[in-house]
Image (cartoon, rainbow, N blue to C red; front, side):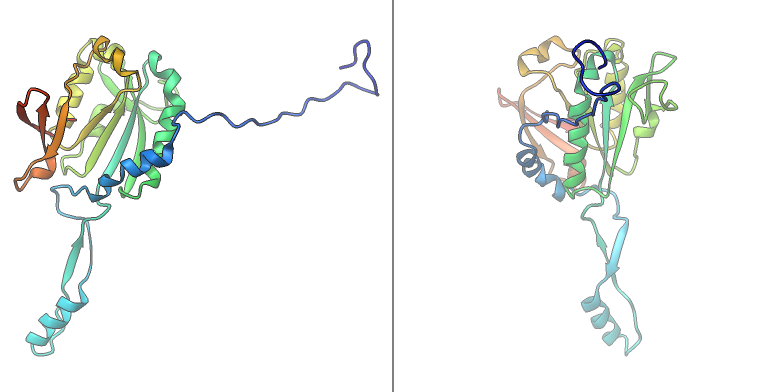
Length: 236
């Protein structure tokens, strides 16, 4: 500055210097490799995309006496969509960077046709509402029904410490129960495992496997440490 001991003419000017922040996820590539099985997820809904099956078209057209009869085959890879949701309660503000890094990991996974990001708020009526901003006044609030997808193509990942107002009032539980009827739902708990029992979401430890029925893509079997098995639709 221009105080005592300063040299040169005029006040000194500060130069901002960018310092890279330490990542929250210590090994994002390892996490991305662990999530690769999601590339094989196939929803029970009819695929949206198709392509021309040249071999089948040639065979069918030959049997038809030269009449060209195009045959198309459905493409089910990357037909699923991901809805990444951050619980925007006050206790979750420290996990904003974790949420941003998770969005990058899922976007680079190559398993989804679309990755959408939204934030879960407590609406004016006390129920759940969603917006595109972590600030409840930063973007318009919409009904939580926007997270619904009756086709079953959407996988919902909710990042939450399960300790906010929506959990105390039971609104978050009812929302999850509604979404699990339509497709897979994951609650990603950022708190250490030793603290899970203090939250508002009961925890059951066990192994998961997909159902073997025609609609098995939407049914998960939970086998606990005691050996008991239970079929649940989409819940994780």
